[in-house]
Image 1: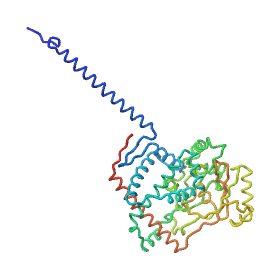
Image 2: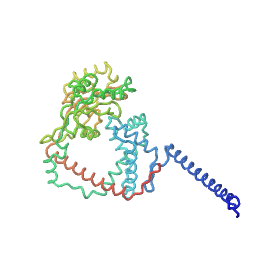
Image 3: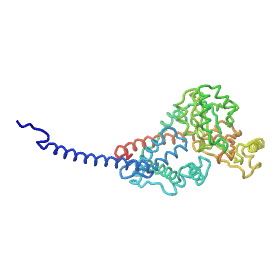
Image 4: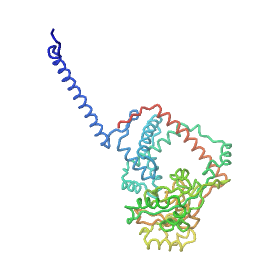
Amino acid sequence: MTHLSWENTGMVGIFKRIMLGSHRIWVAVLTLLALTISVQSVQAQNPFAVAVRVDDAVVTNYEIDQRARFLQVLNAQGDLRQQATEALINERLQVSAALALGAEASPEDIENGLTEFAARANLGAEQFLRQMASQGVAPETVRDFVANGITWRNVVRARFSGQREVTDEEIDRAMELGTILGGGIELLLAEIIIPVSPENQENLVSELLRLRGQIAGSTETFSEAARRFSAAPTRENGGLTGWRGVNELPEGLRDLFMTMRVGQVTEPVPLGGGQAYALFQFRGQREVEAPDLPVTAIDYVSIAIPGGRSAEALAEAERLRNAVDTCNDFNGVIPGGFQRQSVAPRDLPEDVALALRALDEREMSTSVTRSGGTVLLAVMLCDRVRSEPEQGRDVVRQQLIGQRLEAYATGYLEELRAEARISFEN
């Protein structure tokens, strides 16, 4: 009997040919896979590679990196890269909607918006752009941010202008319930504020983190540290700021404070674009039956004194403090050597807002510095301008309109995202 075998049936040759073909296929597959991974790796490393496609528009890695850095400088909290990505996706959709409506921001609007934005840091537009550039944020990143905000505002106004009317009954109800103007809520905080200086700029944040670990949870220890280290006038009171309405707090810090527990201490918070850092301890919250009339403007004087927080600069600030009784007296003491402004609370730089918030009229603070700690910015509170009762109704009306438009804008943006083709490349 003839025995069948791989050899005498020619199966060995067939098998070899099959294996040889399979080997070539796998080599091709692996080569293609390696090339794909290599291309993806190069794209991930290329700052100008496409990160997200939004319909026919794109968002690059560079734009995301820049926006995240800008958010960091502006004291945003959380996952900044994720926030930057989401914001840029939204802006691509918003710009597309603006083009359809003819509602793009004009060059003049952009320049005015940039000037207003820079004024929050007590800087001119070009000064602000230079300061951002020194912290790694390109001028076009700032301009795009401002332009996109104006463009979306134009879109919302054009689309919903006929749906924003507010009735007198709605104003009455809002004022009775205290749901506007800070909601009748006051917060008690303690603070430690330390300006950046050439001597501490390299290790200030790490030192504050170490201090936070030592004082978290203890009000007595926090107050002791405030008396020793803080540059704010509140150091004399253990860092306590006194009860203040939520609406008087810097806009970027309200949500942070409203979610804190009693005794909890924040991580180091940059103020004034990184001109100072602060630790805040939450001490309490209370509701007031009838909130005061809203503060519509803060009238204050600022004086730039060379030397930062040197003994000479602080002595000059003290001399000026003793030489005046009211803000008007500066005209006779240092004519032309000071700046007087009346600014809406939301437009104040954070460090200036916090310094003024702790002051009574005609008191001065020396906690704020500029130019990397080389200039002391002494600030004196002249007046907190509150609206008259009828003006208060107008303020509430505008706030209700703003809330209504914000709700419309949120809903419209959700519609745009739901209809868009969004794909992530990396």
